[in-house]
Image 1 (cartoon, each protein chain N blue to C red):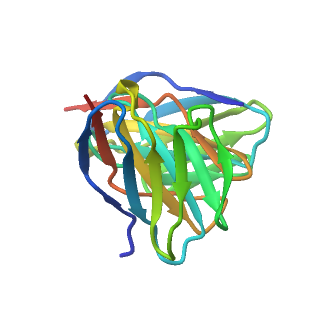
Image 2: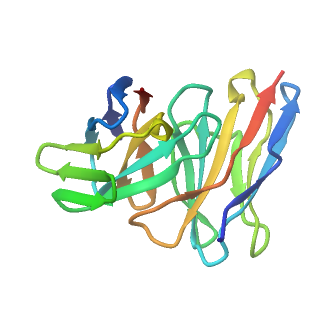
Length: 113
Length: 109
């Protein structure tokens, strides 16, 4: 069964360092998303992406964040200068339709020290 | 923007029925989804309602009332494996799906 894959599963970084989280969406999906979840809290929308452009972004997604689809398969989230409060689980999701199911990856846990 | 409210915790007995409510405020509305998340896992899709009424999928049903900005998830014949967090999510923009605060369901024997 097709699935969304994310790497790394866990990354530890120092405050101020750049981090890139990678996602391979399901191959025939066109709509991509990044969410984050601080431990024990809700799943927060960061950004959505379609046709090589950002469709929507939240207030969390400031200038420190960027997304890119560098080739036909990968979808990346970059945090330029990490802060302690960026520590969270980051989930990538994809879908082939604007209505209905989002398919989530298993997440990348980011720990900022 | 969007805001969604759910009860934070619900406890129910194995074999029983439980209803998890969700109220939302949103400037645009296309539909309401429900997701299940076990501890340490990814959210997994349960249901989607675009129109008013009840949608049934096995032991799970989801209801939507757009005029009341309200929906609920109904879980029947509860099993221990249903212990998890449940999130409603509103499709409120062109490509924006906003999750609610989440309800932690504990199923007890």
